[in-house]
Length: 522
Picture 1 (cartoon, rainbow, N blue to C red):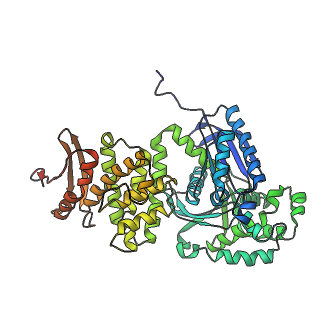
Picture 2: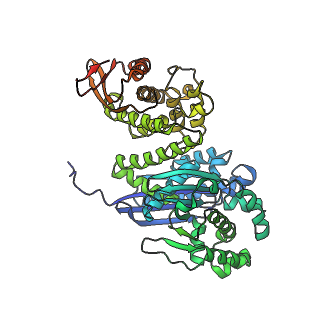
Picture 3: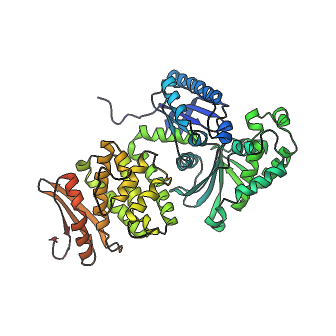
């Protein structure tokens, strides 16, 4: 038997980031939480976005180059003795009509499962990486992650992502819009102003309360180096805006060939670095920045840290994911004028019930996170109409990105929110009909819990302060503490607890704890 007190370190993991301008690989050995040694780091300049952003499809030649790169990384995984890895693909694969074909080829020919992630998940991974390098504290920062196909702009703090926007403003995409090659700064600035019109940053931040601006991506790291910025002991650089403007002026006077020969830039960096510099500068100006913090981390470092959390213990990973999921769900809900006190209270009650009923429902940390999102957003559909708002909530969740939810988890969360009221799941219902039997079972169990939690805040006044669960052979007893007579909560509970009894095959009753008189059965 292994010693439970033995250190889990060292252990090895690997990350693959299939971006629009390059494919990156990192094999790492963790020696402590958030501390690792690079075993192998590779970057292969496969520009998947070149053809995708022009035609909407990945071309055969580039797909073949991507498969060859992934075969190389497969050897790196095996050579370094790594069993735990994660490979993610961003905007180029996400937007291409034949991206699924590339995913299938990589699985068949390389033995690697490639996961196409949303812009929101991309932003979450970057946040995970940033917080390992930058002391975010309780203040809010504006974070921008610029890739070849997209720009993710987020408001972040130590607690998580408060909101995020994904814009089709990547460097490769803009370069293709301009015809490729050397960029005329005047033409580019005109095009950029049109793209920048979609940015809502000035409407969403209070400059006076903004701690600073953080930028990630290979281009900002190159720009910081060109400006002579030296990373500190944590590997973080600070790029003054005046130095960035001077670097933009310098790059504007040079051709792509000159940037390669005189500055030592790679070909696939030399042609996109000026568009990148102008984008970074534009966003920083909108945020009122005097400098940009460059942590020298990105998606692949976020993946490594996520993998490490999985190996160190699911509770750590779940907590981090849940933080992002909660903040993302609240940010989405605020767009639809959510009753936030009610949403937070129902989420708290739902998670309390989930934790206390663990042996009964047998669900895991991923299901807890799904329940959290569904509980926060169950009434979001009221923004459209109160009548049938449960169905409107389904559509809003299913068609939105929420940090911490993967693409396969989104329909489950949407359905759990949909079934917080009215009809129980039926085989012919939209989305539900497309699920596997195991997924349908998850939806039923989570929905049953959410119905009970929602009933306990029927008046939206947060009268129930605590719920204690007792499961026995006779059934389930919920003992609640609160203030007021709780008559409406009792009425709602009697109405909405039927699904719980159907799903779990046990009767459930409510008791209200009245300390002066003892518990009364209502």
